[in-house]
Picture 1: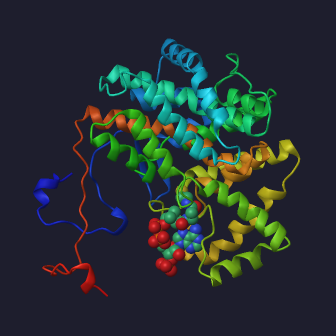
Picture 2 (picture 1 turned 180 degrees about the vertical axis):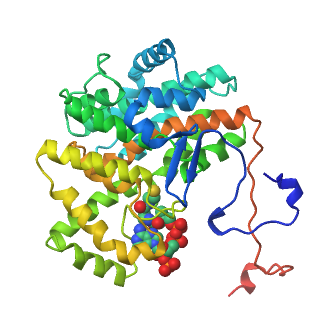
Length: 388
Ligand SMILES: CC(C)(COP(=O)(O)OP(=O)(O)OC[C@H]1O[C@@H](n2cnc3c(N)ncnc32)[C@H](O)[C@@H]1OP(=O)(O)O)[C@@H](O)C(=O)NCCC(=O)NCCS
């Protein structure tokens, strides 16, 4: 990679497309061939064989754990699950109609305020803070969901893994093994994805030598947008729109949206110019869950939409992305629409933390791009009476 100082003349790239600003070992996206690797391991292998806990370890420590390392890591995650009473009180004060992503952003900010050692840059302390953040995001989300529905909060169950415990705290009853397994795999697929917008936000904040909580708050705010993490929620709303407003006629919906130059949510990606490998895995999982729940309605609609959109969007190399089939999976798991993006955050917090850790470790520089000035110069200052 060329050092930025050697480049000299500024490079113009709309949307920062195709710009390298740092180096990473965490993940590699081969966008042309639709492949994704975490620490060099193909995503399919992790989805088939790993767990959220193990993949989280892989990201934070940049190696697969031994059995005892994994046990210790899992124990720490479990010990850190519950939130201090002051945070619970804070959650109780939040308006019930707040968006869960706003709740996450606000409470994580509060968590940072409670850590007197928040500014530490010691690697082992950053790892501990990362574990804490990873452990509490599901609890913050589940507690808020219970509170807004006037339900008793459900405390974390140490007998359940990360995925199973979240579903349990949310729904108040133990999920089945197949639900836990499928949900766990969706979390693995969401854990990390290179220098996407939210990770970039985290890194911009980290590059100023601010604290890790502030970096994660920045990332949560960025993930909320419908062009990024908000797309899974929008993708499910789209299926409901097709069902209700178009009588289930996928073709009519597609023609309408394309003619209005509107976007099909859950399709397209800045880096993938081939099928997103995560979408392929999620499609199989969605079909498996549809059989388990005995309701193929939504996944059948998605497959039809994908097939009909193929000839139109395929020309522009636009295919389903990770959010497309995740949407119907979360719906079939009984999760409300407005929690889908929070689930993305619950998993991606690992990638955010891993990138912050890595950036500090390699001595990453302050991020400070430039904008090309296109205005005029030497304009005289006009007194207020002279202005029109
Ligand atoms: C993800 C996304 C923002 C990437 O976009 P990008 O790299 O900036 O690409 P652009 O917005 O420049 O779009 C390029 C072209 O593809 C079209 N396009 C991109 N995504 C599209 C979609 N989901 N549906 C229809 N057309 C789409 C654009 O309209 C544009 O067409 P044009 O060249 O004729 O004007 C974009 O694909 C999108 O908005 N997708 C829907 C939201 C989504 O699912 N986000 C989750 C990403 S994981």
